[in-house]
Length: 346
Length: 195
Image (tube, rainbow over all chains, first blue to last red):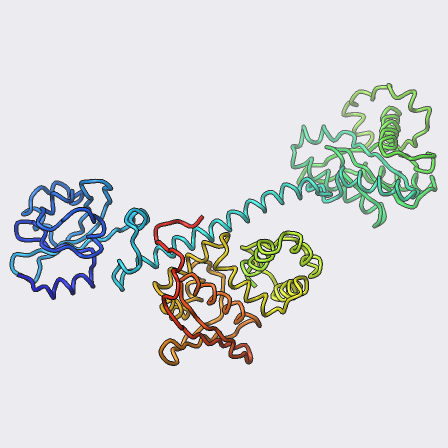
């Protein structure tokens, strides 16, 4: 027979233990395990009547149970809540006695809630409290991270919506044009607006592929930046449509010269890998001082009309808007030229 | 400084004095964003600038404000998660005090890049303790004072706290534990998950 003092030792060292008699009956129950079934007297009941052994499988008798001494046991209460516990069984120091030590394992999260356990219910060496601390700490930290990710995602979408840059070419985008244009009009500045459309770009995209097309757009954007001044605005406002805002300019000849240089450079073949891409550009230009009350929509619409006049007149040219063009605005663009025309233009 | 620290200052002002006061702090400290991110890192100067602005906006000494921030951290309903984490340190206020030695390690377990100053607790005589924080940013001791005060209420202990002094990045507090079970503390059960 084990001395009561041994039970006291076991209560401190492993508060979830059971001492069984050779018949498999409970002789003593550790204090924390007692808390799991406060309404029931566990002493004198058969271990296998209280617990079902899940692993090792097919343990139905006390003899079979004693045969797995030292092995990891998985058991659960037969009555509800059927908390799963893990444990190990060893022959006790007393004659014909067996000690089973149990613990919650991963079911501890439910365990502390279901049984209202406190830190005092765990052995001083048990890491359960630290584990519970970690679970809560990590959940709190994870929550903070999740919130951050959510906010960053929202901020990113907002930033993209507010972006002023065309990501493919690095020049400004349509939003930027609207912004700069309304600023120029509000400050009553004198400026010129060029609407530029690439000719034969679709042919490059269709025959040489999108990568070649992208390369052409990047090259075109670079040319426009190089041919304008630092404070001018170059923007890609559509697939192959660009807008240039030339600030502090009222001299038509200067605008004509800049447009000419851009058109000339656009006609020079662009090398892409071992291919050569040939395009051209048409320009429609509006001068702000030709309006009494400049209006952004009007200016853009008029630049468009001038652009189509350039296309209609045979491409690779610049047309300055004049009111008469508005009347001829229903003129359709000339049909796509044959390759012979393309090579001639090149 | 870890974003959690700045975020704590922001939370304290918003939850105790309202969003308007916080926006006043943002303007006075000339902060770039009106809100801090808990999981990002900020320059130390930003934290100091912010706390200074809070003290100015509230017209209160910075030391007092920092102490209130400490108390807010472990007692406000919005920071319940943190209170629970602190309560994991011990069953009684004395155990909690003794466990402050582990506070930096515990903090790092939770958030790996959160570095709190090294803290040592010494029992001078029965129920007399000194808490020493090393390599602190100025004011950490005041925050700690607020935490210790609020946690005493949490455990239901009656304590007397005193700021002994600071010198070259070392801040020292004295804690007299007058009565361990002076009042009914707040409940703490392992199994209830913080909101």
